[in-house]
Amino acid sequence: MAGPDGKATAINGTPADKVTTADVLGVITAYAAYTGKTAQDGVNAVNTAFKTAAKTQYLNTNVNLNGYTGASGASFGTFDIGGYISNQPNLKFLKSPSFNSYSYTPNSDPTKPGTVDTSTDNSISFVFLYGDNGKFGSPVNVYYYTLD
Image (cartoon, rainbow, N blue to C red; front, side, top):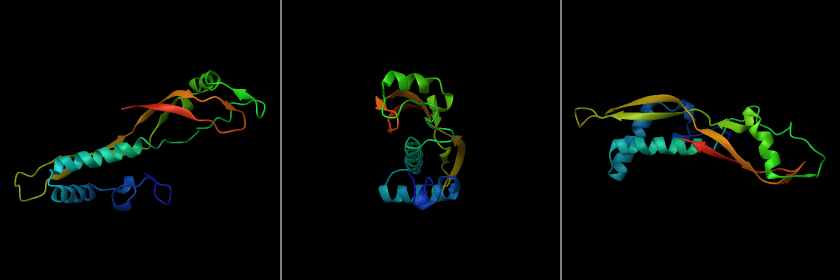
């Protein structure tokens, strides 16, 4: 999700790329204590939250329809916009921002917290599905599906 500064946010408003394993360990420990579930359940919840947030965002570098032109107000169909986007690699395939996922290793002493490890550079891939009919000069919706 985006915070007031437009950056993806995560735990306690900390930008996702600044979250530490200590932050995650604190959250999963609190999660386990509050819910009565395991720390592994907490890690799963954190991983799911990050992945879900990534599915709502894409990197927008070089993502625009400026090359798709026509007379202002003229109509175009779903196959027209689809043909254009399908031939533009920067529009046909999109990626989410990178996000971390975490794994948890319990401590052999159950009275002590376990450890959290980080896997970096995860992302969601989006593939163009179709676009709506529209008119040149007006916004148009295009739809993508995720590969995950």
